[in-house]
Amino acid sequence: MKLKQTEKLILTYLVIILVVANATPQDDKEFLEMHNKARVQGGLPPFTYDQTLAGFANKHALSHARDCALRHSDGPYGENLFWGSAAKSLKWAPKDAVYAWMKEQKYYNKKTNTCMPGQKCGHYTQIMWRDTKKIGCAKSNCNGKSTYMVCEYQPAGNYEGLSPFDKHDPSMYTQT
Image 1: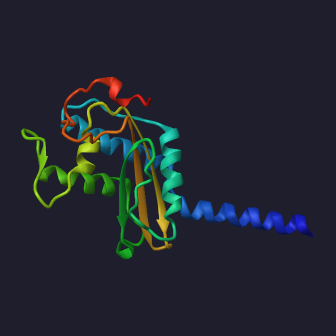
Image 2: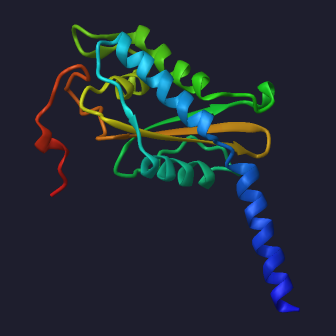
Image 3: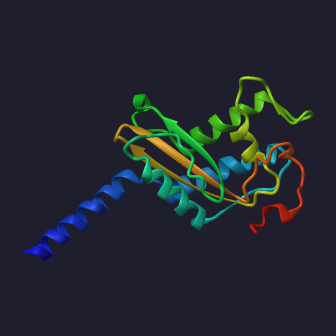
């Protein structure tokens, strides 16, 4: 009798995971293609897709499946977060997240390496961080109504005072 209850519990958790974490290989491909399209336009080398980073992103996305909170993981990677409202009926796609992050470009002044006062540029500059080589992303439902997306970047970018378009000393990325 106890074994059947355990089997039911395991099956229930698997169903929840499959319903909540709904990124697909096509989503991974779209995340990568949209990021690389932006980087090529910025004169930067393309990213490669990393499943370890995607796993980290997925864990973080699932941790907000109930509250939809745009809170960073404070993990070892650079990170961009996206939340799409239920108004679009869970049809938010990876391209929507990358597009939203890239819209910050209009607030970023490349010559002065500054963001317009009162605006955000950090999502854009993370995507454009020249030294970043790999990304991994995840997409999940939150509250069964909205879409939550996370991308992790390695190495992380957005070091204060440094331009995302410059090459930086690789030793700054090693943890001591």
